[in-house]
Length: 251
Length: 336
Image (cartoon, rainbow over all chains, first blue to last red; front, side, top):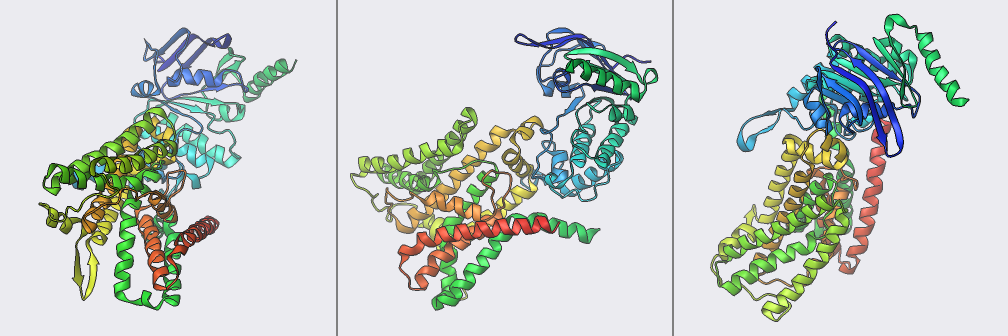
């Protein structure tokens, strides 16, 4: 097996006196989905903020392609091919799907003062990019606000993949979605994996995680509770891991 | 597929200004019925002229509002521009085109200053431009008094360049016996340009994005600050243009004018489908909004009513069209 694209070793993060994360290990390989599971407050969002470049880590080592890194901004992470899709920050709701996919990197045609957006091509590419990932959305002129939650996630993921991401960090993409919608997003996660991306999927749903995951990391109060390969664990055992965490918290 | 594609495109383009179109038709029919002189072609020409004077700044204000900002100083900036051009030319005994150029520089500087203050401080543009509104209003009065000792500028009608400047900013010509003012042509040309920029230039995409989803826009690398500053400068340019029209149409400028006009521009943009919160609107809508204004101003006169009623009618219109707009939006949303 090749070296992981992203590797966290003993990573910790403190906000003042609060220790949000301590000694967490995580690996994300190309062509695999690494799931991070945990209840609210378990440290999932702190973990992805470190990987996304929003907050630097305090302890441990974050490696990308085997080199230790410390990102100062999401843009820096993006330059290394790590794209993060946050729940609500990803899209402009009043703008059409194609304009969202290309926002900031619009295709153009013509020269000088007649230079203009190549809207027809952006529509085509958007349709194709979504279809490639198994999302059927023929009307790319609809404003994003009109789409279902699942479709929105798909547009945001398609955007990251289209612009060359090698690693995709997804922040609870199936939270608050119905069964069908969640299925649509998980199909797209599987498609991203099949294209050779390293995916880090944050979720609190063991069924969603098990449907697409290769590796699982269960977080509890900022610490790694267990790391498993798919062959080492069943979905029931995974659910018990999380339930155990809940019981312990309740006690 | 192509047919449904076309209808969808129409729906998306039509949404913001559908209410304005209905409002314009209603106002037209109303005055057509109650004011017989309104039916003449020459009246239509006057309506278009008045609409263009509101409409040119309203276009820029619409772009600014789509970009999520306000400019309350646009009304008095018109007069600042006219005063600057007039007094500079007169005091320096220069060709009026020199004054026109100096005035443009001053106007753009005010616009850029508004923009820089808004994006650097993060203070709402409503407050920043409320400050510049009062400053410009005071400067107009005090500066004119200081330089001319009067409340109005002296006539520059006999100065070099006046004739050619009037031809550009304030001439008129006859089409089939009907007098057409040149500002109407400028208005429609600016509207076409604004529409093209909004829907076809990448910066148009950015204007919608910085207004509707500023954090997303920044996250994907849209130069949010530069776009907003450019929008304030565009608004200043439009105010300058109308200021030049006022100057060369009347050859003197009253320093106390312009107060309150900024609201008309904002109302025209809102009536035309601009969201107060940004991210939605259109140039065509702003044209229709200004046209509704022009029809109301002139319609009241043609109907023989006391012009004192004008502001009351503007208020009624604003409320009516906004309610209509909200209704149309709900209906469109339900029809999906």
